[in-house]
Structures are given as C-alpha cells and as structure tokens.
Image (cartoon, rainbow, N blue to C red; front, side, top):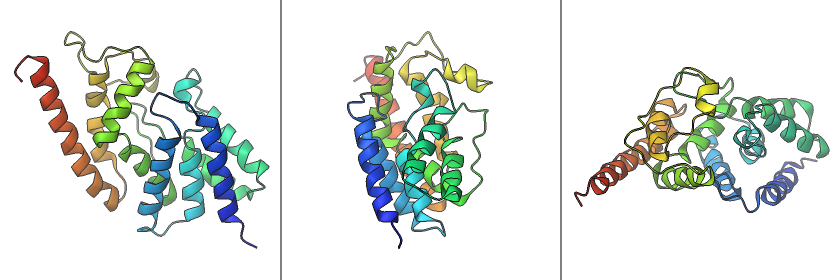
Length: 218
C-alpha cells in the first residue's frame, strides 16, 4: 500500500512545528510556498513528485545560515526525520542530495543540481527569493541579522568564495545585486524562467523607486 500522502502530511506537521515563530523569512510559509510552487513546476516535468514534495518541505529544516555555516546539518536533519518515517533509502538519498546544494552561495560558486527533481525544487526556492515576496523576505532576514537597510558607502560585491558570501554583513540593498537580481538567469526549467522574468522586473521597479526616494526625488 502506497503511504506517500501520509508521509507528506506528517512531514508538513513536523516542519510547521519546527519552524514556528521564525521571523527571518525562512518560516513555514516560505516552505509552504516552495512546496506548492515545486508541485506546480513538477507537474510540468517528468519527475518523482514524492521526492519533489519531501525535498521542498525539508529544504530549510535546518538552514546552514542559522547553524554557523554548517552545510551538513540540513541533510542530516532531513535524513533523521525520513528514517523515522521508514521512507525507503533510495528516496532518502535522493532528497538529501537535493537539499545539500540547494542554497545560493555566491555569484561565482555554482550550485548544480544533478537531477530534474532537484532542479524543480531549486527553481521553486529561488522563485520565492525574488519578486514581491522575495523583497519582503530579504528585509526580514536583514532585520533579523541587524543589518542596515542601505549604505551608499558600502558597494555590492561579487564574492570569490562561499565563505566570503556566508560571512558578509553588507546592507540589505546590496543583497539584490549580490544574489536576487542574478537568480533569473539561474533558473533550470522553462516554467520557472517564465515566472522569474516577471518577478525580476518587479524588483527592478522597486529598486528604481527605492533610490528615487532615497535621493529625495519623490
């Protein structure tokens, strides 16, 4: 008997409880949007939708940004949960292989997904980092880290290593140029590329307005 729906539902409950109260933009509702978007994109592709759903739901269960840069904690936490649910090892392996390279680590550091399932989930996660939601999440994260909104004296950078990107404390506006505006060109699937184009334009319009107001023109 296929118990995929039960496993997905139990995972939803687990993630909701684990991420409750997060104010950094990496809360349950971020995961919810990524999950729904991954399902939408996945239905356009020939992919294993159970793997897509579990990877989307667990992709931020223990984000390295909140664990001193430990990139192994996310896959380890996801594996421990899936093993408790008696998920078959090939599925666990596939899910953890997707979670491990999920995060953007800087403009010059590739994060290649080896499977179509991984590409779908990565696209869904990146779509939630841009557009109106992406703007809101960016400022939420910056505020949670005590970062300035903008400082014209601190220019955006293209970091040479993942460690430099991880350790950056630059103002939040810089993050648009160091990550968000780069994501449109990093989408894997045709569906995501189409959605990203509109969200990218919205961010450009926001930044134009932001700098006009910053300079006292509006």
